Image (cartoon, rainbow, N blue to C red; front, side, top):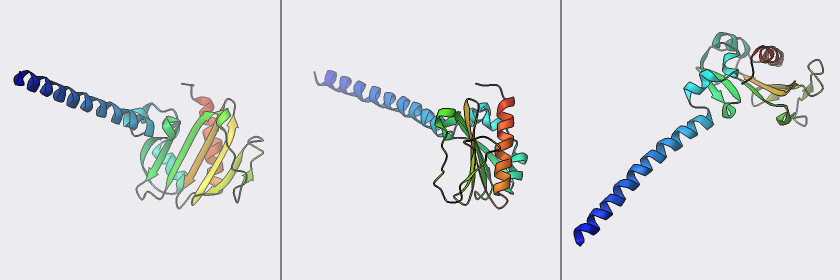
Length: 167
């Protein structure tokens, strides 16, 4: 009788450990996808294909060494070696468009549309606009990031979004 109890107890222990290990691996895979850490997904991200590292370097004034998924896969981020410079392009459905109109330094960009803007943010710049069925948001920071370059980045992102096929 004791052997049967011991065998059943060991069986439950082993199956719970194996089940836990599989669940942890699945959870880590899901977390990586949600955070945008999955390198394979970055290669499939439309926004990550919009700009090369060299092009991104021109917007932030620093050499870009890394490209990764961002904003739960709705964006892409290019970062410099110093981690002080980065560029982000995010494309979401138009219903999620946000204008930080109460932020200090907020400026409208009527040449892009009635909802377009540029604003200083976190040591860099943010710009955004509605673009058809999308809202395009860009951010740039680094020693060479300026209001003008961020507005240029928004304009180029809008052009390249039009040229890219939808998912």
